[in-house]
Each structure stands twice: as C-alpha cells, then as structure tokens.
Image (cartoon, rainbow, N blue to C red; front, top):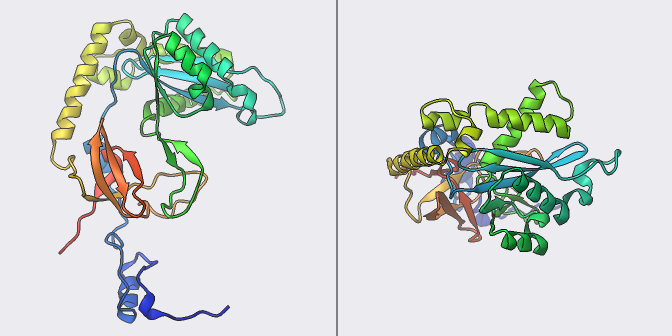
Length: 325
C-alpha cells in the first residue's frame, strides 16, 4: 500500500496528549487540535452532587419497563411520586431451552395489556404511563386500551447507541436519563434477590420482593418527609405525597437557581460518555462538537454542531468547555 504524504492537507488531529499535538503542529502548520483535546476529564461526581434533580410528576404517573430474568419476563411499573411498585409476569415458560429475551412471544400486546389490567385490579390508579418504544407499549391495541381507560402514554426518546457521533449506527436504545427511577428499582430487585441467595427470580420470589420493597422505608421519600416512610405509606396518603412533592420541587428550584447550573444557548459543552457493555469506551467524553440549544422540562437540549442532531441530557451529564485566551 502506497502512503501519500500530503502535509498541507492535515487539519484533524487524532491524538489527545499535549506533547504529541505540540510535536505534530511544529511539523504540520495546518494542524489544529480540538478545543478540549488537552482535557479529557469530566466532573461527573461533582455534577451529580451539585446539579442532580429529583423527578416528580402529576399524580398517578408511572414509569414502565420490561425486566428479563432468564425464562421469565416481567412488566415493572413504578409510581414516580410515591415509588410504589407493581410487577406482573408477562409470560409463562414457553421454551425451557430458550431465553425469554429472544422469544418474541413473550412481549405481545395482549400479554402487556393483561398485565396492566391485573395491576389495575390490584390497586394501580394510573393516569399517565411513560416508557420506551417497545412495540407492545405503542401498538394500536395498546393505544386503544389507553384511550378506553383515560391513560396518556408518554414515550421516552430513543438515542443512538454508538458512542462515536461520526459513525453510522441504526441501533437505538431508550434515553435512560428519563427512566432512571425504574432502572434503579430493577437493580434493587436484582440486589434483593442476590441477598436472598436466589438464583432465579420466580413469580413467587418476585411477589415477596415487591411486598418487601413497598413496605420498607424508602431513602429518598424518608429524606424529604423528615421521617421513615415506605412507598405504601406515601401511596396511601395523598397529603403526604403532596408534601414530599412540594419539598422536592423546592429543592429542584434551589438547585436550578445556583451558580453554574444555567448554561446559555450556544455554550460549548462536553458530554459524559456513558458506559456500554457492548462497546469499549475509549474516553470519558463523547467525541463531537456540542453546544446548548435550550433547557426544557428539567433537561438540556444539546446540539451536535457537526450534524445538527439533538440529544436531551440532564445538567449532570454535560460540562461547559472553558478555554484560556
């Protein structure tokens, strides 16, 4: 293979370290490093401590997601304000030799609606549902069920999975910044099963876990209530729910009012590069040139200036780029 040396055409630098960039810039005068090339640090811990907002919603709003557990798949629903948890089995064991995740029959709309009906029979009063774009959540039959039961479904935006903004990747994943509460409760369910020395979370074990979760003091709820409260206590007491929501709203207001939270439109920012078990993370910062477009509903609209694509992120996952002049 013949390599053609065209020094005058060099404009993009592939290195991040200062000594390599300085050496190359002496050789190739047209080479320009990226603004953030010398600083790959991202202040995630500081951002979470200073800028993390707690999610609240209208009464009777639930987040939903599917939880895959070997041969089982569960529909998980959690009330945003009260953290009260409902879990229903979506499937029976269809094929003992096949994982539930790979079996399309485990996620049909009919089974999803049956689970919602069971949750409502068991006391779930729901006005709003929010989840990703699972076909069973957004199908015509599901939409008809929502309409018949005065439920508004709010889909969560899906993001490109790839962590290199310049590579084409058609695969998407839900924006779990919006589903953080349900992500955490699914992890809690698995942690509880592990502590119980359970290898497989069967329907009976899941029933026990949900009962314990709803009955035990909840750290976040207790912090804002000022005393130990469980999801069940808050779910059964509208005044207590209102009190906790008001406290969270006040704290969110204080967080958004402090210096550093507000980023003006056009501010150049770097974005935290989320870990993905399917992709090796090369940097704490996503490659690309990003700037603030707007702030709405507790999230920042961030624009990739290379392709004008928009991504919604919390303040904790973005940091302004500070340049020295």
